[in-house]
Structure formats: structure tokens, C-alpha cells
Length: 211
Length: 214
Image 1 (tube, rainbow over the protein chains, first blue to last red):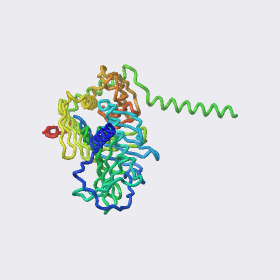
Image 2: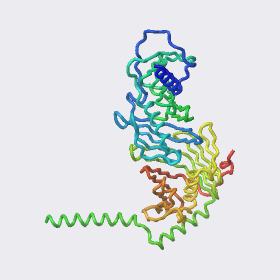
Image 3: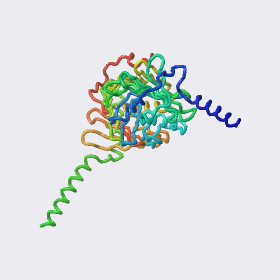
């Protein structure tokens, strides 16, 4: 019995260590009754393809250039990122639970890094509301509603007034805890998307250039 | 009668094939040497070059194109300035062994000694403009082909490091002044980047300030 309690405490500590959202930035909503929100990644509904100015900062590397994200089927996207002169950094097909690398620039072709990148893209591209949230918070400052789905390991940040998804947070382990920000919506699509992996200090920024 | 028609059709197709083949045949070693010499002589007299460029990146898997445009400046010996205007402003200056990149308000200094990719890109670009790339037998195997309006130099990397990224570089030289008109970089992924120069201004004064790294 004591060992079970100990195990639970360890599990709780591990979960809170992985959680990418700082609870001090949130206040628990007083509303007990609320309608389960419906939301989905801006890349899911009606999205075909988009061109982005892109930058990636990870470890000591700063890569910039242009990327394309293109929907290739109901369950896949293609991501290509190359520098301004045209040399490819990434060329990969992305699925909800995996990816197929067509080409990866050698200095960043590291298995552990690509695994984290894949889970980041899974959150960015395939997330949508499923079931009722476990908790509802309010983000201090922005006033956005924050829905926590404990079973899915996801937080969804919503601008209720404009019915826009402003952020996502997710994790499956300590290293892949990730925050995604969607900013400056225009015609239902964000002009800026940022992926932050605080644990490995990675920032991937997409600035929308055109469809 | 049917047989005569078939033979006639075959003859027409054969003539068409021969005519097309004749327009794009690899040069004999002697002719290739002559073209190299002319390109090298043209490069020797080119102290500066300014041109507009259109860059098209062809993505083979998803059949998409990324088009960028801008202005290119070259000054002897190893000064290059790529000023992208579309789809967004971006600046790269190659000044001897240093690179300066300006991306919106972010400025980045890169040493050519520490960045192998930029070093190779710089060597390729300078070599393409100066015509010295074709003489680089340590890194490339070169075949020159006579096309209707230009000479095509196909450069196959033999250097393992370059081979990891590029499968072929193709340079197109104008038959009128032997300066580079187009540059195609084929990547191992199957993608390729096509850079076409236009409105070329040769040996016009370009201020050194264009290549100054702050």
C-alpha cells in the first residue's frame, strides 16, 4: 500500500515535470458547467498548402529559409524546408504517428531530434478536440480559455471572443514537451506559428507568405 | 503501300532524332578545351558583374515550385552579394572568408572556415561566375555540351562531401560573351534549384560598400 502511494507520488511528480504549461500563468475557472469546446488545428479544416518564411534555432544552429506544408491525404502532410539559395534541410512526409524522411540535412539528422520534431508536427497538424476537457483554466493576461485534456496530454488555448485556437501544449515525455502558438489570424489562418521546445531549447517559427 | 508508309514514318522520326541529337551533343575533348579557354578568357576580363536573378526551386515529391527574385553582384576576386527581394527581403554577402546574412532585423556573421555548406556554396557560385569551376577536377567531373544558343557544362561531384548534398551542377554559358546565363543545382533528394541571370551588366562600377560586412 505504501509502495503504491510512493509510486503515485513519483508518477505525479514526473507528470508535472513533463507538463510544458506553467500553472502560475493560469487560474482555475470557477465555472463548473461549461460546454465542451470544439476546435481543430488550423491545418486541418480546408487547408491545402501554404508557403512560409521559416527559421529554426536549435542547439548552436540557426537555419533560415522557406518552407512548404502541403496536405497530401486525409492522414498526411508533406513538409519541405530549404535555405534561401535553395538547398534542402528537411523533406519529409508527416503522419499522426510517424514520418517518412525523404531527405534530412546531415548535421541535423539525429534520431532523437527527429523524434521530437515528429511529435511537434503531430501536435501542430493533427490536433483536434476529442471528448470533454478534464479542467478549464483562464490564462492570466490574455484572458484566453485553456482546456486541459489530461488523457490526451494536451492543453488547448482558445480566444473565445473570436473562436480562434491561439495555442496548444502537449507532451509524451520530459524531452518532447512542446508549446505551439498561433498568432495574427487572417481569414481563419494564423500569419505566425511558433513551436517551442523548452527542454531542448528549440524554436521553429513559420511566417505565412501565401497559399 | 502500308510498308512504304511505315518506312517513311520511321525515316522522318530518325531524321528528327538525329537533328535533335546533333543540337545537343557533348563536345570533343579538343572543342571542350577551346570552350573552356574562351570561358576562362571571358572570366579574366570580367572584373564585376551585376544582374537580376530568378531562382526556382523545384520540389520533386510534391510537384511544387518556390520562386525567389533579386539582384546579384560580383566583384573580383571573391566578393558576392545576393540581394533577395521576393518573396521577402534577404541579404547574403560573401566577402573572402566571411559571410554576412541579414534576415529582416536579424544579422548573422558566419565564418566560411567553420561552415562547410556555405563554403561549398561560395566556391560553386564564385567558380560559376569566374568559370573556374570547370577546371576543378579535384571536386567535379565536367562534360561540355553544345546546345543551340549556349554551352552547357555538366559538373558531376566526385568529392564525397559535395556528393552528400548535390548530384549535379549544370552551368549554361552564353555563346555571345561566354558569361554564365543559368545555374542548376540538382540535389540528391531529386529537388533542383534553377537560377537564371538577366539584365547582366559587365564591368560596370560597383561600389565596395555593397560588399562591406558591418
